[in-house]
Image 1 (cartoon, rainbow, N blue to C red):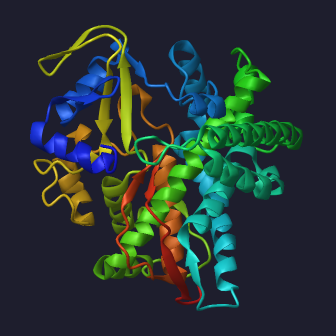
Image 2 (tube, rainbow, N blue to C red; image 1 turned 180 degrees about the vertical axis):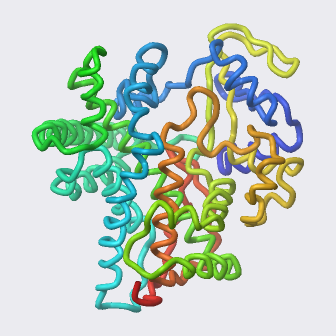
Length: 428
């Protein structure tokens, strides 16, 4: 559990299934496995559990945004954000997302050092932050992009280490990191508040303007503090998962030449051009299968946890009040009774026929139940745009040869940097 938590949880889930009680230093963790029990936890008994929000630093970053809020506060936030994720709104967003991705890839084309080796993490992080910022705040985000990127890098540097994964820091070092992190978070709040003001003045259609329009419909208006929390939540939840999933996707494509060849064959059927339309995205079923299989193996959100508000029976076992129940997506996506040859990267698992035959709660990259990810459809659209537009223009030759293992942080990112050589493929 200390050195390889996700692999440990997978072994427990495969050996014991159902509900497994894992002793920890200060109590027990209840691992819930199998689609029927996961449904019972997340749907059937949802009113008897709340999200696990014990991480004080995460509370300091996101406040009471959509990810961490509960009850009436959460319902109001969810309803206000929902219009931005409806099909019609997503189609309008493709009209600016696709050119924005193309502009970013122009930078790859313009590299003078064509044979240089680059790290995927910063490349996809910059792209994902730009897309998330434009979605939330409009074009004014571009003026703050560099500052926001610097802030997120500082947050990663000073984020509290997880005791089970690293050697504990000295008390002096912990205090220094805590002070630097607090300064960084104050800078983040200042940037978000400035963006809210500038976006409001620009009066440009974006998610912020949608949230503010909620008040015009007779609903209780959001305070500035509430908007700040909501924007931070949507920004971090949006960009970090996108960046991480794109790293894993292109790592897997680099290791599986036959899969990459099929992706190239499919995208080459689309008429040449710098951008893609919604209709063209619909003609990329195999690209979608590749992304779904990537999320099965390396879902950025690697686990979900709930805290019991009262004693609750689950799978024939009684969970006491205050118990923490966890669903490991990493483990659930590797249960051999639901995923034959679970370690194999096989996009064919997600053909329509195979998907229809699978239990709905055996695949959970966007969580499930009433607290499922509001941006699931947007994530799929954004991923297909990025994968297809890269495939049309470039070969990403994998240079990293050492084994890459998943690391369980706030998202499931690679244990070390993945490096590639970017080679232009053809003029789009």
